[in-house]
Amino acid sequence: MTEQQVDVLICGGGSAGLCAAVWLSRCGISYKILERRDGPLAMGQADGVQCRTVEVFESFGMSEDLLREAYHVIELAFWAPDLVNGNGHANGGVGDKAVTSSSSSGIRRTHYAADVEPGISHQPHVILNQARMNALLAQEMERASGTSDILYGYEVKGVEVDSATASDLDAYCCTVTATKADQEHKFRAKYVLGCDGAHSTIRKSLGFKMVGDSTNAVWGVMDVYPQTDFPDIRKKTAISSEAGNLMIIPREGDSLVRFYIEIENAHDVSKLTLEDLHESARRIFRPYNMDIAETAWWSVYAIGQRRADYFHRDHRVFLTGDACHTHSPKAGQGMNVSLQDGYNIGWKLAAVLRGRATDPFGLLATYVSEREKTATELIDFDRSWTKLFSSSYRREHGITPEDFQQQFVKAGRFTAGMATNYHDSAIMSAVTSKQDLAKGLPVGMRFPSAQVVRFCDARVLQLVRALPADSRWHIVVFAGDIRYQSAAERLNSVAIELDRMVKRFTPLGSDYDSIFNILLVLSGKRTEVEQEQIPDTFVPVNGKWKMKCLFKTFVDDESYNSGHGHAYLTYGIDPTRGAIVIVRPDQYIARVGALTDVDGVSQFFDGVLKH
Ligand SMILES: Cc1cc2nc3c(=O)[nH]c(=O)nc-3n(C[C@H](O)[C@H](O)[C@H](O)COP(=O)(O)OP(=O)(O)OC[C@H]3O[C@@H](n4cnc5c(N)ncnc54)[C@H](O)[C@@H]3O)c2cc1C
Image 1: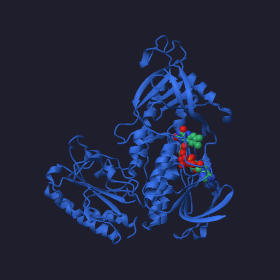
Image 2: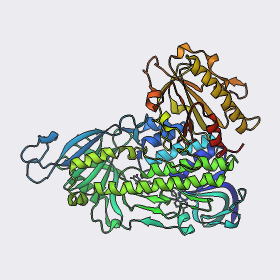
Image 3: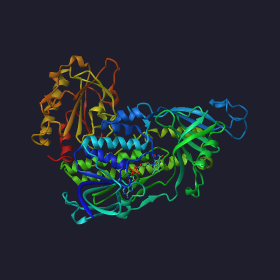
């Protein structure tokens, strides 16, 4: 038997585990991933990448590859049973293929809609297979830490926590047992992440249970090369037909398409064959032709809506992803929510292990409160969503195709990943916030982007690009138009007070912006402001050559080629009043305060960061 020691042991190298690992690599934390597969995931599983997940990739500096390779979902098409008697062209149906009978034996298009509510995110909803998503995360881990810390071929058998030493931050109080090629290996760790999917060994070994529905909804999923005359084959399409429900998700590249097919009354899932799925698809698409030239991947996916009864043991072992919540694949949430679990715990573990947290276990407890809330909301959402997709439920409750469309579009904020809203905690303070100063920046929600112009070089940027996921807290100062004397004086006094605070929290010898990333967003005409009017607090002198960093000042102004971003308007900030906004390392808005209230900012950080 071998024995190794590591700060964080991640059990399972799927979406949640890899995303947490990216944070740890970027923060220089020692970790290992144990993965039972012999190598990276090759194909299949989830594919829908919510706007929020694209934003997460952007915060890691990885969104370009994702956006280049992915299918971009712009428009939704809705199809319903064609009940039009003798007139295939009625109600906006495409007509020429519609079947003329009083009962339906065909389908017709009823509606098109925008896939994502306009303005919900500066990033699109895209489709990229989970294997490629995982590969992008693994690539970033290697780039950041210079090595791959994924150990393939390791089967995790269980975890034990020595509760007696769990309150000692330095204790390696978790022991994970794993096997590789019949050889047993022990790993001692300070923290363990159970990222080992729906059948989690870690969860079972802690004695935690999944609670919720006992029944499983069954969906067939297949990635196919279709030969068809169906007109919306390259659009995300929801088809409700008398022969069943099907969802089309076009895949990256020009030819592959995914079908999700509802399988009602599936008594024995193991007996379902690929031919059954092909036949269902053919019937649902009727009267259009649907010949499947090749099937690249398929699976029958049975899932209930359940969550774990506990998410942690002694704040030393944490469950993430499918290990603590399962739900149907229809709303495209599985991979996204799991990845966002990893995104939530990663920076918190890094802060604790770097000794930066005022209350380490309090910080880790926010993972549990925030992600339990998200999991519960997700499961509630998925329950109503699943009913909406079920043919029998719709029949029984008289839900029309039009009702279905409306609810589908209404759920957009949730399916885009933009409904997450965290409550007050040690790292979130709506109660001390002055929300009316920035109505468009709700405390508890992720910081939305807006276009701004960078002051030093007139480059047009999305503001979130200046808030990278590198474990620093962001302080965004909206100081208004400093061409006015009063605004300029106000900015100078804010800068002096912020400087005092920065020096209190930043270790001697460290870069000025190593703990806080302080950004300045002005309004008004940038060409009428000079660099010397920007206080030094926003122009830190850093690095080997002790050069001034000019990349922290932005102006809400007209650009040469991309128009005006209207950031102050989007954020609901009055330039004559301004605001200071605290944004967490994971881009959630923690506090909105008055420009004159740097004391409030400082007090907030007393509860968060060690000085
Ligand atoms: C066959 C299949 C099809 C799916 N299809 C869809 C879909 O079409 N749409 C959708 O939205 N979602 C789908 N999902 C769900 C989606 O993939 C998950 O919600 C998402 O991957 C969850 O991420 P995760 O990191 O929690 O778990 P996973 O991505 O499942 O990762 C868990 C990892 O842990 C490893 N592991 C498990 N047990 C052990 C062990 N004992 N020791 C070591 N390693 C272990 C696994 O090999 C795996 O790599 C599918 C899942 C599966 C399994």
